[in-house]
Image 1 (cartoon, rainbow, N blue to C red):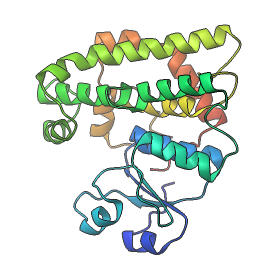
Image 2: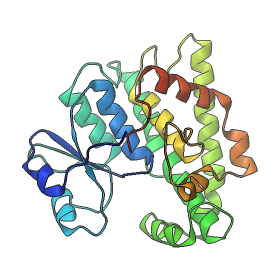
Image 3: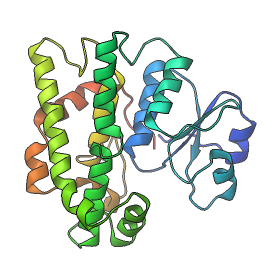
Length: 256
């Protein structure tokens, strides 16, 4: 069952929280933002990203997603901005620790997943590089567009697989240490935004099954592209954590 999307005009006329999201694709940044709002039970109106819609660009200020717009406040498109908005709109349940040291750790882990040069960013460049070289990943025309938008170059493309593997290994090591300490979560003993980011961003490496995540075959094939280095780093502990998250905290099937 898909999201009931509003038009730009309908969204502008609507009060409360509106968010531009990528449709039909489990884009991890969009799915992570949806996950934050789902856990916090924050109602929101969905607007599908349409790249060539001038009204959407004028309202959201850009041609990308997610973009969260609350009431008449400025658009928010960064993962941290959207997280802070969610925390303000619904303080309970908190998705960032109150303890200062744990909070700093959570922000660092979240950036390693969502931020520039993080897991999602580097995996995207890996798929661009593979597509431009005809080895899989994004189709060449998509790879060319995304690569130009996000700073792909020969050096960045060549470095991306090792960076993806490094970050996957770090996240797996963190989870294993947490398990040894008696926790199922990345930080402390409770669910945080880091757990949501980890679960949703694995779609770029191993999408959820088709019956709960319906995807175009070409897109699924692109997301599933891996090489031996990435395969070795995609530890089962990460996939088991994702399974727990969707079973206990996030919504299935995905509403794309």
